[in-house]
Image: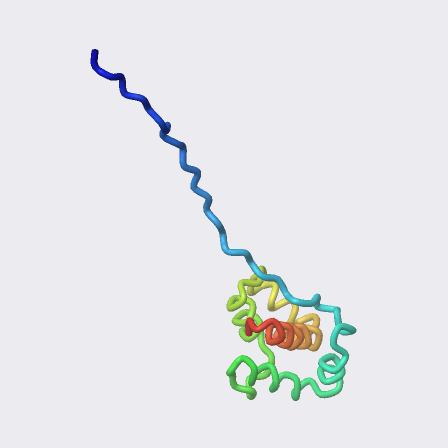
Length: 115
C-alpha cells in the first residue's frame, strides 16, 4: 500500500490592510493666542513684521503680505484639512488671528522637527 499524503498546513486567507496617510491638523486653534503670547503680541502690534517672519519661514516674498495663497500653500504642504474657501473666509474675517495661527504652527512643527 502506498502512503497517504498528509497536509501539514492549510492555505491561509491574506488580509490586505490599506493605510491611508493621516491628515494633520493645525497645532493650535485660530483663537489660541494664549498658547504663545509673544507671537500674538507681535501679530496685534506689528502685523507686517509677523507677516514678514511667516513669509521668510515659508521662503516666500515678504512684499505680498499674508494672503489666502500663503495659508493655502501651508495647509496643503502639511495636509491640513480645509479648502481655499475656508482660507479666504479666515483671512477675510480674522487676518491677524490667521497669521498668528500659521506662525504658532510653524514654531510647533520646528520644535517637533517636522518643519
